[in-house]
Each structure stands twice: as C-alpha cells, then as structure tokens.
Length: 447
Ligand SMILES: *Cc1c(COP(=O)(O)O)cnc(C)c1O
Image (cartoon, rainbow, N blue to C red):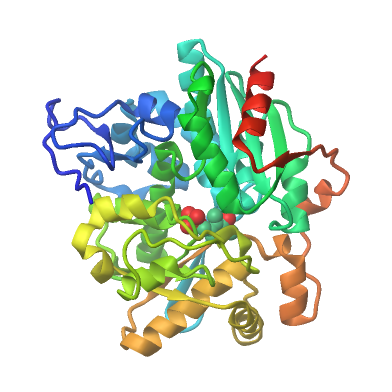
C-alpha cells in the first residue's frame, strides 16, 4: 500500500493532488488538473494533501452552500469570491436533519433534482469541470459507468453546460424503471448506453477507455466518485449534519455516522471531513449483499480481494470492487478497521427494516437508507455503543416503488419530480461490453 506521506516541495500550505499510487516526493498536480483527468495516469486516485484545517466558525454556516463556500476554497485552489456563485447554484436544495427515536438523526440528502445524494457531488463537479474546460478552450467528454443514481445525477448536472459532453454506461436490467427513465431522458449533450453486462463490466470499459492510446486525443474525464471533484463537495454535508446536530439538538461531534455504501465515495468524503478536523466518533459502513468491505474490516478477506457484483434491492450500492477502497487505505492506513465498522444486510432484512421503520417511527426509508438503519441497530446491539447516530439518507423512497410495495403493501409517496418523468422524451442505445465498440462510439461523438 502506498501511503501519501511525502512532503510536498510546494509551499507547505498549498493543497496539491497526489495519486494514491504516487511514489514519495511526488510533486502532485493542481486541483484543475486532477478534476480534468479524473483518474491519475498511474491508475491511482487523487487525494488532496495537506488537508486544510476547518475554518473557525464553520458550524455557524447558514446553509450547505454557505458552509461549502467557507470550507472548499483552499481545496479548490480558489478564492471564496471566485467559487461562491458556483457553489450556491449547485447546492441550492435543502438538506434537512430529521430526528427519529433513540438518538438517531437522518440527514436527508435526496431533495435535489434526481432525488439522490449524488446531486450534491455531481452538480458541484459539473460546474467546476465545465469552467475548467472553457478556460482551456477544450470540449471534455465525461465518461461515466453507473449503477443507477450516479448517471442520472451526472446527466442532469451537466446537461446543456458549455465545454462538456456526457457518455453514460449502465448495466442492462440492473437499474429500476424509474432510474432508467432518469438516465435515458433526452438532454442536450448527454448520450446514454445500455450495456450488455454488469456494473463491473461498465467500470472496466471506462477504465479501459482511459488507458486506450487510440483515445488519447479526446479529453476524457470521469464523473464517477473516482473524480475528486465529486468527492470534495460531499465532505460538506457531513459538516452540515454536525452543525445541525449541535444547533438544533445540542448534540456534539462525538457521534457514530452511518453511511449506506457501495463504491465507498460517500464514506471517503466523510473521512476527508474527519481528517480536516471534524471530531466524529466512528463511521459505520452499511453494505448490502456486496460485502467485500465489511468482510475486509472483519479481517475475513484480504485487501483488494474484490468480488463480482451481486444484484440487490439497494442497487445503487451494488458494487463488488469499490474504487474508493484505495483512497480509504491511503487516508486511514492501519487505522481503517478501528475507525470504520461494517456490516452487510440482505434484501429480506432490508424490506423488513423498511416496514418496521415506517410502522415504529413513521419514517419510510428507501432501500439504501434502510440498510443504514439496520446497520445502526446491529452496531448498537453488537458493541453496546449507544452514542447518537447520524445516518446519511441517500435516496427518496419514491424512486423505488417496487421495494416500497413489497415492504409495506402500499404505494410509495408521490413526487412531482418523478411524475414529470413519465412524459419526458427518452433515447437509449444498446452497447456490447466490448472496448472496441465503446472506442468507436467515443470517436464518432468527437466527430
Ligand atoms: C451511490 C449511492 C450509494 C452508495 O454511495 P457510494 O459513494 O457509492 O458508496 C448509496 N445510496 C444511493 C441511493 C446511491 O445512489
């Protein structure tokens, strides 16, 4: 494992972005370059170093956008005045903290345009990336493999922005009907492809395209959580949750934070907030049947002993080989098993938790958030740690009507955003899980 501990030759307080695989003494790159590249040339993932400490008074921020404008500028290598308008336009939806019984608090991040927390990272990153592309006078092709929510958030975030076109790859039959409609709705500059294969095949195609010498002339970039530009804004909502806990509920930072996890980008963003000085107690990684990470934490499998993806009800977390594992290892090293506790929840238990949460708490979660609620119960039972729990709620239950019906026997709550989708124009093209087929398409789009 490469530990990014080498001193930077730059000014010691200037943040540089280093690949998780960079050798000691690596000079790193500026934020804009890490953003445009997505993946580092050595195949590693970018991480900022040194991490700037949180600014005084961050808990006093009036909104998520205000908090982002206080915390992110040193990480983006920009002044506050330069990035604040962009952050305000990206983070323009509410992120309420909802108290449940037994000292549990749910941070709802699904009130953006695609009803999932990925709007936070995608909307911010799209604006940053379009700005960087325009400054360079280039058109960037953003290539995204999605297991559902990423693609719709990215497509929505980038549509019609100057300087970027988006190519989405998603696995056939592994996203819900609502998610698929969100993915394939016609948007300016967005092209959706339904891949004959799994999410892992989609990810492999993306990685292959980045390494393909014939595609070198294209400005390829990624918008998956491998792109550090998506990760940074996600650190902000953890701090927003902590600020609301303190102000509205008199709860301090020493809480356990439960993160419904798949590719581990969300959790990595929480760890970044922690490394910047947030005094959080412990993280819980709540996984579905794709259990590589909890198994690793329990020392039952070796690092990087990834697995094929299994399809589940919480399909946005169906990831057998989580990309951000490499970042977590780089950030936490040997502390990883101590700072993060993990568990794997099967579909039957997920449905039972959706049902019991609605019956006992009057709170109907989506399947992903239900995995998180189950993880909190298990953690408390197994460890006796009764500290308050902050749960990241990742998607709106209305996006998963089948799961809601199976769990509760009734229809999901209505959402005007989703109702509007029924009439939207859609367009999708099939694609073989084959590098040559993707190359042809990318070259064709670039004309
Ligand atoms: C993407 C997603 C997750 C998993 O987040 P990762 O950053 O991939 O760990 C959980 N829930 C929902 C609804 C998602 O869209």
